Figure 1 (cartoon, rainbow, N blue to C red):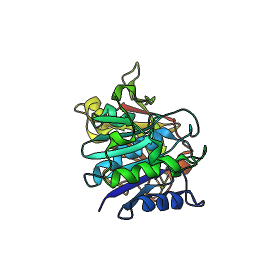
Figure 2: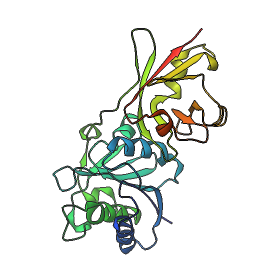
Figure 3: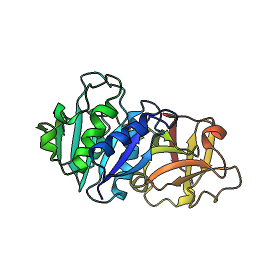
Length: 268
């Protein structure tokens, strides 16, 4: 059965997600649809990019990943379908797929321009229904990406200003909170590889993680490694440093938010 994953910022209180699914099934009644999430923060392209980057690999080869977080809906921004590692992606050309290109996942890219595969009339406010969903459905039914529009070099895809960890004058590793999950965990841009390389031979307990006025000593191996309602730092399932609170909400307890700076120091 062809599989289509869906990632949007539409939420679930309106009809948008259901209408997109109905559109997909009208084109390809055999499609299996799996929701990754519809709770991306509104218009947060960076969060959507991080989520699809983490999630796509856990789907079967041949999956079409439909990602609709589209602040530029109704403008001249292109719609893309991209292919790589046995997966296809349909998304606005606003940087959502940039991390996958940087990871070397994206091999071929086509602009989605052939109106024969759109719903008509095309709304200026709901391309998810009228362009993205039909394109994904046709791809899942076996349509060649070339039928949707011309191939373009991947270098022509929109970039995304991805904040990367840096080093301070004192040698600290400095990152930032990229997004906050449903549990209130603060997901940073510091991945396990950067952290391991930076700390070199320092032991796990010989690290100090600082966010705002809060200090966390060492890395935890589980969310319960810290005391009840105590903050902790851990490498989460996405492979990135998370700041959490044992049975609590780090965003609320620490008063933290997206883009807040996270500083890691070595201690003696």
